Amino acid sequence: MPRTTAPDVAAAKGVRKIVMLAAYDFTSARLAEAAGVDVILVGDSLAMVVLGHDDTLSVTMEEMLHHVRAVARGAGTSLVVADMPFMSYQASVEAAVANAGRFLKEGRAGAVKVEGGRAIVPQVRAMVSAGIPVLGHVGLTPQHVAALGGFKVQSKTAEAAAELVADAMALAEAGCFAVVLECIPAPVAAAVTRTVPIPTIGIGAGPDCDGQVLVFHDVLGLYDRMRPRFVKQFAELGKQAAAALTGYAEAVRNSDFPGAEHSFSMAPEAQAAFETLLTPDAGEKDRHDA
Ligand code: KIV
Image (cartoon, rainbow, N blue to C red):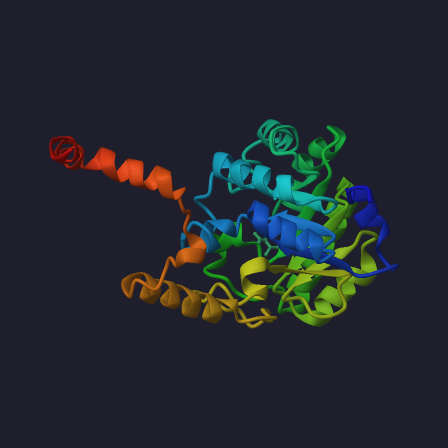
């Protein structure tokens, strides 16, 4: 099967739901692809989930590239989207194009994602003109956490909702192939989905979006530091992992692990010769006794 492309995702609007997952390494990318995930987003949420920061602001281009390369090696036919980190595109159009280009050239991603609406249209246009597919992201944009005063539901008033529709439309007109809608009321997401010609991919945006995205660790119940209302855990692997690790620690302490089945043996003659080498006095004694 050929790799999914950004135009494939754009063409899915109104035809089928798009499945996106934020995942950060080779093994999780392989699992995602095997599950039939269309798009693997190497989200800057890795700053929190993988690197333990309180928000996404401090993750760097080099850190993101490191994870994008790992995901690209495991993603198989899924489209890989690299999240552009804070301040890698906001300051200038030139920086945006240069940094986005690195994700395709060095990271082997198929597209990039940026946060913001009309304010970043020049950057989106320039990236698209350079041949870089761009996924937009409006609503709760975590890179604006300092200005927003926290991770809060956005577009709760009629005026703010209308602004959001205008932002999503501007991104579509600038050439984005799809747009993420994060943490907005479901009726607002439904209106955006009806209005814009590109697919909407929701997270905390209700059921009417053209697709959905969640974070790998949230879907599997592996991240317990923060659990937003929009997360559905499809498994509780964190509990299983804790039990397994406790079992491992106990088995080591009790000398129950490793067993013979986890160990390598030596030919008996080689072992006997080896033991002789380790105790040269024993060899001396044998010669004297002879
Ligand atoms: O960084 C991320 O994981 C994201 C998704 C939540 C959309 O931006």
